[in-house]
Image 1 (cartoon, helix red, strand yellow):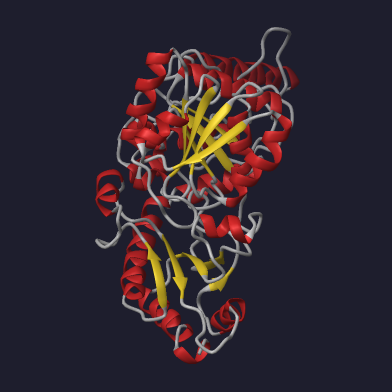
Image 2 (image 1 turned 180 degrees about the vertical axis):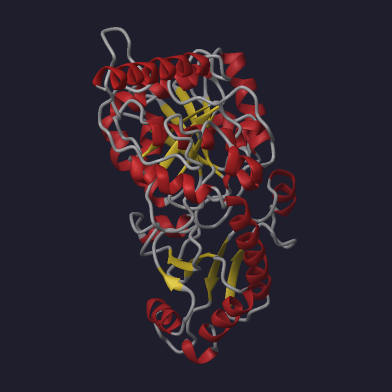
Length: 438
């Protein structure tokens, strides 16, 4: 009995080793680790969200990859290691999730991290100390904090913030030490877009002429692959906070970096293993489970967001409205070219009180009148959430810094959920009544 089980176990290890070798002939041939099958059954996002990557269970044929919590994996003998050795470097559950997410974004390699900020920090590890990074204006406050208060000190990185849609300003900001362009499109929270193909053309033309290698990394958190695929638009790396729409249920924390280029994939694989800021097996399981319904959730949430934006556009209490799906938005045509919809987030600046009530007191009265919308950090869950940008997502910026990028005490970010849109609109209408902030 014992000998039979050992022989069976060794057969399993040998099978795993053969599988690992077969994966070496995938889209990223030079990369070991989590890579994607060469043959794709479909290019449709709704199909890839369910069937993408390598999600099969070699042990029992489970329809969904099981959670493997093991830290280590037994080797049959010296030099006979299987596909996995130590979970920091590779884990079956995380591998299934990474391969699916890579497929979804049109990449060949993905490394799943412990959070979106961990993914951003890992991307910066590709740079040498003293490098220069050009960044989209008005990025997420947490990204700005990491850049300015951590990596400027710990790596000596220098950051320049410009409008990435202004090709002249972008090229003028490039230096011999420039190694990366950090793109956020749409931006958080004001939903400014970047013309990714135009940016790629300008930067790569300049870099080629100067003999430089400049990486273009796009934070695709707000859009997801359902709305746009930056790698297919010419970007080198996609960053995601998978806590948001990929997980989709406000019950997990994670991030990811995806690329379609083997050389970058090799660097990311090494850095991920060396740094160790990986997604846990359970978080990977939750994210993969959530990703299965990404397409249907995004379709409903983006449709709801469009209708919420149309209602707010006509409301007298609204001073500013930001939603690229509206024809009145200055970047609506870019949205139509580059994205499927205007997204599932709406940003709004409300008018203050005419009777001397402070803006923050007005906000407290507004939030107290809401029934379905909840005041909470984060976004992308099935429930509709409102973020008070000044005290939440951009609290790390001073009031003056927030004003420079257009964020005020009455600026709100609405993450539109799956509820009936009529209920959502009525709820907002009730909270915006004049008596809530006279």
